[in-house]
Image (tube, rainbow, N blue to C red; front, side, top):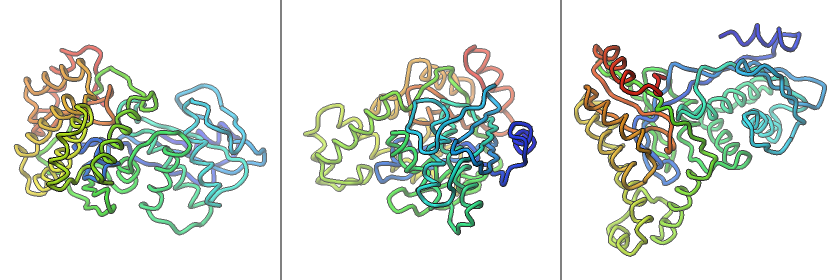
Length: 354
């Protein structure tokens, strides 16, 4: 990818800045991030790159290598419900912060697949905010940028996500995992053991987190938190655990997933540090069962893909991302990945390796 040359070709001038951010895969810790729990994402090799400069038009001009046309939208344009919202929302946030004012030209190149659980939206917003901070000569930190990027998703896009994705794409590099406590944003960057191979496969089931199902799960967790008198559903005391019995079945199941997923994720981080592949894999498998049965965010296609991955040799496999489609992540011993991937994809013609 060379967004600088593509920017020059598109807009007839060089950009002021080019930045990038990786996609991410969540190894374990699903829907715990907005419930005050632990998460363990890792950076992908795939990245989003952006090149950016000011213009005098009062417009945001957006060109992506994936589409033929350049899209022009007014600065401060409200959400429209298309892919350019993420760029416009990031630029609007930069303007609110006084990092970047006026019209902007943006060129985007990406090999992070959309709708796959690779957090393409967080990577795009983060890359644009990084560029805006550099242009504005603003002293900031990856954590500050992650907070602003989350605000774009929450306030402009209307997606009630936690902060995991934004922290992961801002702080993790390929080959490392980010053990993040979302309650206080403390974190530890862990080297993934060289003997471990995480491979990500798209199920072929595309999902849009803004379609309402993610929001419905978020609202169920909020309702359970309110009923139990806690702001951190992942961390219940004994009285609150006993009070779970009085919740409606759907809220009880959501709470059970979030609470146990937090514990699994803390243990998984320790297992990775100790190079205990078997324990980590077992926690992944427990996580998928909980995600499918208690959080009810899987699909039959994804469950079949996970089961086949385990049957042909994966140590661990689970749905990753917001749910209802997208990708699974598998843990395999490093020297087996190519044969494993070929056999899995032979069984699932609509799936592909990310």
